[in-house]
Image (tube, helix red, strand yellow):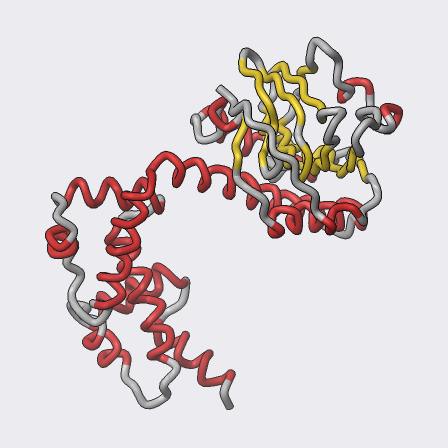
Length: 310
């Protein structure tokens, strides 16, 4: 159930912006990527103002009705100030500042600001086979319909970057816009994952990362790290993977490869020395792994970095 608490927040940054909305026509070329932005906008509704302030600025399909509307697209709506109400399918409650309404295609929903507080909203609509596949796989689901992620300037900056891209409509703007939308979706999924895991899992993961970084020149010993955390190896793997979306082994390799990149910048060091210093079995295994993770061989990385400094 959505939290019933109402909080009012006012941001000087959002007060300066003019209302903005844009509904886009997508070409067949745009749709080939499986991701398209369909509409986006911003509106500041002052206390007592009608909502939306200009209903004629929105196509009939997108106009809210008391019974709720159903859209053939995904929408993310970020409320940066004010409060209001939300009904989405059978859930209802109050909307706080710093919250996100995440509407899925086919969901009946209704929302509006409180007359006493008004609100400031940023929204973006999007569609495509890629996002549909995320929903079909359950990665995006009804549990994400309302999230209290907090007040973050970088979320607003992502929306403003979307506004810039769709307004200018430079070549391939859809690809750049959808990369920003993916960033928003990722923020919501990360928030949900970490909220579910709780503080204990966060502390375990942070301590594990510290232990790996402290032993970056040693052999990869997941069992030893598990013992230091008083966990079974399988339990440690599960907690770390659930919190970070990668395994401890993958994270440890990531640390080592990043350290190898820095070591290879030394023109006098041999690749074999880097492999030995970082605890790899042999130079050839290290070289294969380095190329797998970076796309180039360590010798090529070394040559490129040498070229930057000459």
